Image (cartoon, rainbow, N blue to C red; front, side, top):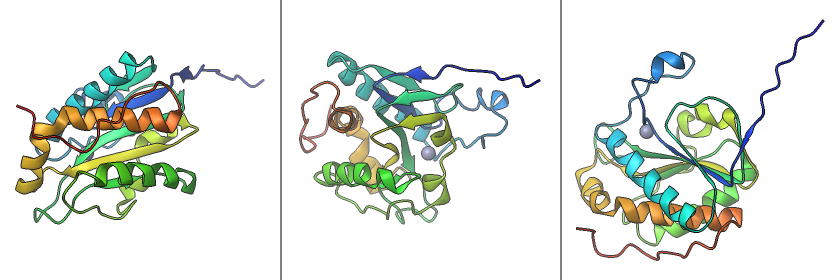
Length: 200
Ligand SMILES: [Zn+2]
């Protein structure tokens, strides 16, 4: 006799996960995940961007699974992003980058790069330039028809990049909301355009 456990997948339009959020408290419950706490300051920033993106998406009628770093279950969505900032030692060797597990998601990555490169004044590292980008632990918990991407929004350990990013976190969220809306065809989120002057 074979016992099969059927767990219904959770269905949303899009999924937005804040990298490292909830750690280290969540780590003991997910022993197969590396308990990576992120670069210095990263854990404080990823939820701000993720919350801003979720707020904009929900205001336009898009259903959002807004998740921390570690979560149970399987999600069926149109598009998913896992938000991070990179760290580098020595500093300023990195920049923004994009990760994805299959070539099917390369077009989504190209669209994000095109949108973000209008404003981000520092370098983009090549797509999937680390194993962590290509084989991100949470990809396996998400089925995303239109793309599942890790977005590294810049190098938080580089003082110049950090100074550029710090006053723009909610704009980053608005741009991600536009990207996800466009990618998924859900909602009609407006393009916030290139980054305005820094937020107060
Ligand atoms: Zn990270």
